[in-house]
Image 1 (cartoon, rainbow, N blue to C red):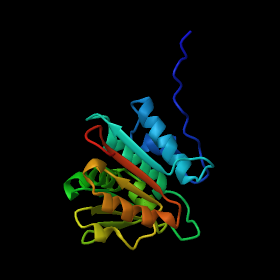
Image 2: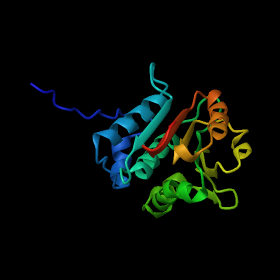
Image 3: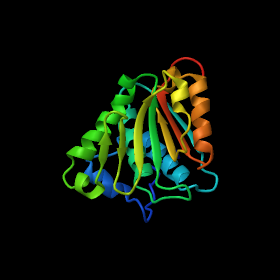
Length: 196
């Protein structure tokens, strides 16, 4: 008798209630794959024993990578501070155009969801493409076209979109930024080429 597939349940934590946030943002994981990625991210951010810190997700087009990345971003942003301070997240891609696929969804929800802006009190520095929430958490969009611009950070999480097009040098620099906090790398792309 074949086993029935069970979708992993995303655990509640005292700092983040995923299903409550998902309802507010009108998000429903449309596949077991999205649930699995978000489960892995949640466990990595919780520093659960045995959790995979570097998560790569190669999918077909229109799978919902940008939406899934945004939900992972919310999970990281709404956590309490660690020994190094509030969460710090970077969204990176090979170009700003690709980075904007996640950034635009996130900012639309942050500034367009009733009550969310008031609750989180975001400040947006457009010249630095940096948002700081009232809890001190930060999120910034970057491009990997200048790898040296990816240094000097102590990150909770890095989200990389179109990872196959991001240079190995850029990924290596991000790994250094994640080392101190034992941060999470979430890399998205389509199943093309060699490497990612």
